[in-house]
Image 1 (cartoon, rainbow, N blue to C red):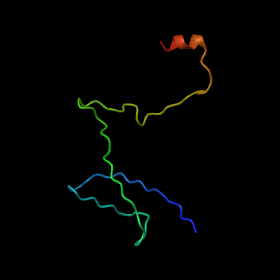
Image 2 (cartoon, rainbow, N blue to C red):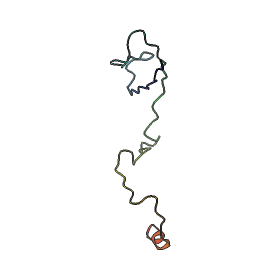
Image 3 (cartoon, rainbow, N blue to C red):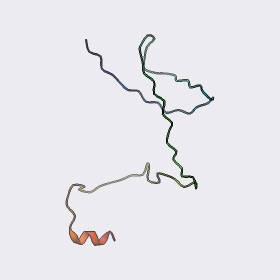
Image 4 (cartoon, one colour):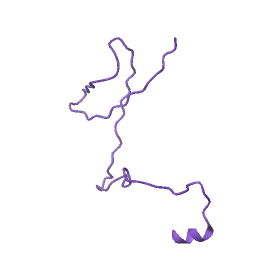
Amino acid sequence: MQTTLQAHRIETTMLQDGTLTLNHLPFHAGDAVEVIILPHPPSKIADGSDLYPLRGTSLRFDRPLEPVAPEDWDVAQ
């Protein structure tokens, strides 16, 4: 019998130095799990400006794989 590995991702905030509690995980007592902890990258630059100003904004690409006509390049300049 082959077991399918499923990753489960949780983002949380440390409430106490050196201690992290995770609740409501989709695993059962006796299941072997691997835990990898990664710090969340900062979303602000040192000067306080947003590192990712377009994150969460809507994007739409009309025919993204179509070639661009030479005269259309002038519009973007």
